[in-house]
Image 1 (cartoon, rainbow, N blue to C red):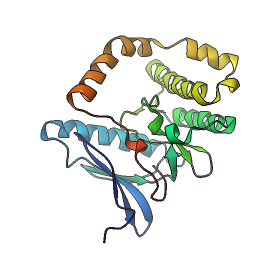
Image 2 (cartoon, rainbow, N blue to C red; image 1 turned 90 degrees about the vertical axis):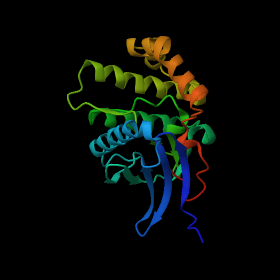
Image 3 (spheres, one colour; image 1 turned 180 degrees about the horizontal axis):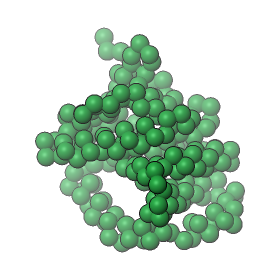
Image 4 (cartoon, rainbow, N blue to C red; image 1 turned 180 degrees about the vertical axis):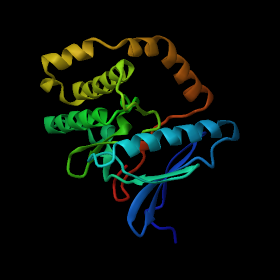
Length: 221
């Protein structure tokens, strides 16, 4: 009989992400071995990016801890909760706590780079925020000008979600940030994003919604 904690969360050209049970409790496995042969080098690269980012953010509540990393497999802790688009947080305390997590993340030299996707934001069992899927994250310990722009985009994406679920609590400063996207954002929207959407959705049929799966197991990730 299959253990109720063993569950495939995501499968695409870059491999599989699954929830597995161990003697130490549930954990997430990112496995690049099932990746398409022509995409395996990229799958391994994304796995390494996630490993570097998580190694730098150890100890931040709401962010997975890295447990073990090999060439093709990354194990990280499981966070009990549900994805933002299902839980629909409307409590201002959630967004205040989320902003605090981002500040700690950025002080550690990590920009997530994929926080526009609601499935990458969790509402934990205690009502607090969580962040998952660090494949696109970058670790920049010197935190130069490019990093500061990326960090600002992380914040803008959080504020967009706040505008969706808790708009009445947006401050003047937050509204000003929302109204002024960075050069990186403008360039991506005009050039990179249309190509990305065409390739991933039309050609590959890739939805990229790891956190959106049923999380009713012990709810998390």
